[in-house]
Image (cartoon, rainbow, N blue to C red):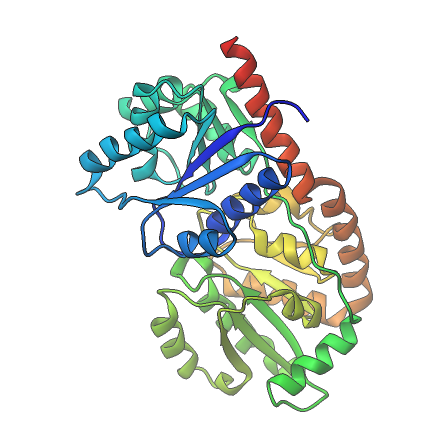
Length: 373
């Protein structure tokens, strides 16, 4: 193996979603290659807890606007002590603190990761940050990379897309066995079938639209239930919305599930009806690896992984009617849906493995280190 690297990641978020899972997965891959990986997060962050349980070196910084000055000096001392080759930052607050501290401590490679397609305002501060302050930007999709180039004028050579990779577990059961097992777990009749969304419960993920779409087609598919897998700040409003629907008894909230794979294996369709912000969503990648038909809105990086009518079905965002249309298509034509799911599996096995993700990020780091020589 080449030079052993010391890599530090900072993350201000205290949640556990696609961004945090990507950090954790990538850190694990680099550690398996023999590199030293350190994670710095708020003390109460779920990433902090999971990293410590997994045996990673960790530090705790608040990464709030009020604590920025103190975090800058504390992070500077950590960098001075650890002398990392790479500092990777992930959210806004920790990125400004991290890049400024990293510059002061002369960290060789400063990487700013961008995971979501939220627009970056074309002001002078952002131009300074992405053109000058960080050495390189890593995005999870072209939908995030291209706006940085077009809106902020960032040199294309300073922005690389390294999509998230997935390492699926071995699947001990076929899809039918998984469906029957889920019927038993949920105490539903053995003839029950499922469609679902696996995502954090928040407004822009579109779960309310999905519930409306399901209500409009539920009579045509009397054995189907809608599963909303996940938790998050949107739960109270979504629960209230469900209670207003006539099919509320067929819409089930499962809460967060540490093992979402058994749900994907049991679903006739996995939908992600997001209305904004998506990068390359891990939820749909997991569905594809599980052999589950994938349906997603034309938002962010979703069209980068779903080729309409080839590896899945796309629909226009913010439209319950559009969701209902593709839902009817996939449920009324199961053989065609499974054919698309097979093509999707072939696609993700080639382009979205954890190994490929790690190799792409490592190649970026090695190029940046070579520039320093």
